[in-house]
Each structure stands twice: as C-alpha cells, then as structure tokens.
Length: 291
Image (tube, rainbow, N blue to C red; front, side, top):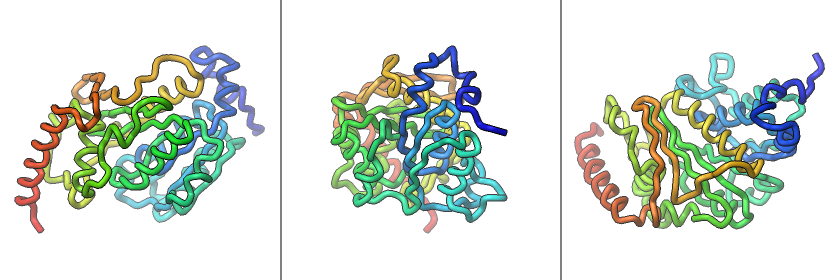
C-alpha cells in the first residue's frame, strides 16, 4: 500500500484547515525521553501530522514498564526504547524525518539536539533534574517554546515556558538544591493545587529518596492529549496558551480542573509553606521506612 500524507491525516481537517495541516507537516518537535509520557507524546503528535522529530533516549524496555509505556510489550523487552518507538512512529507515517539521539542528551549535545526545532516537549524521567534544567535553559536562550505535561496520579499538570515568559529555573528554584529538595520543588511546582494527593492508596510506594513512585497509564495518555493540544496552538500560533507562572492541572479521578497561578514560582510564600510541610512529612515517612 502506498502511503499518502493527505489521506492519512484527512480526518484532522475540520479541526484544522488544509493549510494548517500542511504547516504541521513542516514542523519539527524534539522529545527527550520515550518512556511513559514520551512514547505517548510521539505517537499522538505523529497522528496529528507532525512531519519531523528529534528523539533522545538511552534506555531499554523492561517488564516494569508494561503498566504505562506505549512501546512496552513482551515482544519489545530489552529492546532500546528509541528503536521501538521510532519503528512505531514510522509505521504510522513512513515519511517522517527523525533525527535520533540513542545515547540520550548531555550538555555537549544540546546544540545538535535543538537544531531546527520548533517546539520541545519534556518527557525525561522525573528525577533527571540537571539535564532537564539544561534543556529548558537552552530552549529559552534559543527562543524555542518548551512544554511539560506531568503524569500525576490519574491526571496531568501542564506548564509552558514560552519565549519572553518566566523561565524554568525562575519558576522551580531548583538550582543548588539536593536531589531530594529538587524532587519536592519540581513536584509542588508542577501541581501546586495537589489534586492527586487525595486518593493515593499507599503512601509507602512514594519514595523520593529512592527515586521511585507509582504511575498510571491514564495519566500518561492524558498528558499526551493535553500536550498535543497545546503543541498545536503553539505551532499554528492559534488559541490561548497559558505560560508559567500559570498552569493547568486536570485530575480525571477527582473530575476536577484547576487553573494554577504561582507568582514567583516556588518563591511564593504559600508554596514555601507547602514545601516546609512536605519536608516534615517526608522526614517522618523516611524515619518509618524499612532500610
């Protein structure tokens, strides 16, 4: 069967014009991390008709990924995530222009990784703080819009860092902090409304000190839907995009939507109070945890 781009994505028309669909075909999106949210981002944006991607991931699929990651299956265990997800995307659109970074991203790769990129979609592991900060800073320096949609509980928290808006570092205030403190600041900065905390069934499964936490496929798929919608608006310069220090948190389990506003980011007095409370709770949890 011969592939035809126009036919493949014709059902997008109506929600986008033919001219807008053609514009999306010419756009390049960079995604770092192809696990839980990253794999879903790639497939969703491919079906939206994005024509080019820059992809980075050094990891391989494992059985522990089965609950949420789009490329995790019996047939792909031990295979590189980048190879698997690249095959899946090309199976949807064989005309895709993909630039792969199979060793992941380091500071030395940032120029190459962001060359020709119209939008960066953050999909790194939650605890990859140093390289995440470096990529967002590089995007800001180059005037590249950068977005993140975090899978939290059974919902998603979305933030956009756009040219001329508040920077990632100014919002999260993570520089110079310990890994544990960065984890707290990242978590509370993503979701100051904390909608997801009301139904956590087993707190012992949240171990920021061990860089472990629970996850759901619902959250990953919600992330992909929200991020792709905001990506469409950014790439087509159409519709309102809320930029940091404003954000959006939708929780499907609680059926609630919050429009968050955090002037000063994590420097905000109420946020400082939440951080202090979370530190106290975390110290208590760690003291009670088995070695």
